[in-house]
Image 1 (tube, helix red, strand yellow):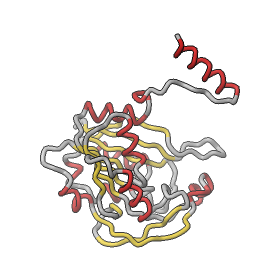
Image 2 (cartoon, helix red, strand yellow; image 1 turned 90 degrees about the vertical axis):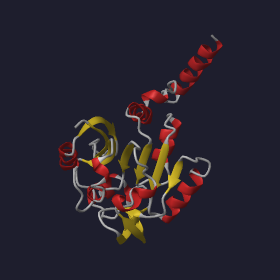
Image 3 (cartoon, one colour; image 1 turned 30 degrees about the horizontal axis):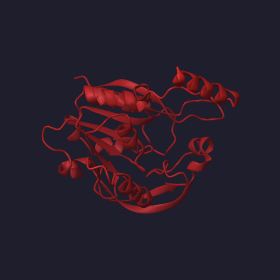
Length: 244
């Protein structure tokens, strides 16, 4: 009864400030639901492409996923943060700093003010207007590699894998460099756009159809980036699992 009274008091106090407080339920969050999917599919390795400072990996850990993760991130500052975040997690591996794409070599990445919007592609006005802090402020040279070239040391035979791609418009190039992996991966999660936000990016319909042709079906769509001035949804995260 004491706990119920305290919870009620907290809610009432928060409501006075226009805040709605609810009991935390990890299974009701997007990360919690994804972790449940990974467990159901017996995923033993999550391949985290476009890890930034580890937000996705940490959310999986907090929601119960305990198996292996390998993260890829090209930005120097974000990569250093990844190494710090993963220091005490023996099942979380950080690949050398590199971009992932459709070839092996070197590229120039545009660094955004907010870091998470950094991309190998030029940003379009629709993105910059919806999120002013996403504007580019610097560039960086970085190695680029295909997943098919670099995953050998992380992906053991028989491991059930799941590929997450959050590369700000570069998702189709990542897929193009993972043709062998896609024959075996159990599922994927991609950030997909409904409108062009980066020069030359592939949009939602085209990439969903590509994955459908490869035998994957949509299991979940998670709300993402919206235009605050109009409310229009611009990007979503889409989870796929193999059904064929």
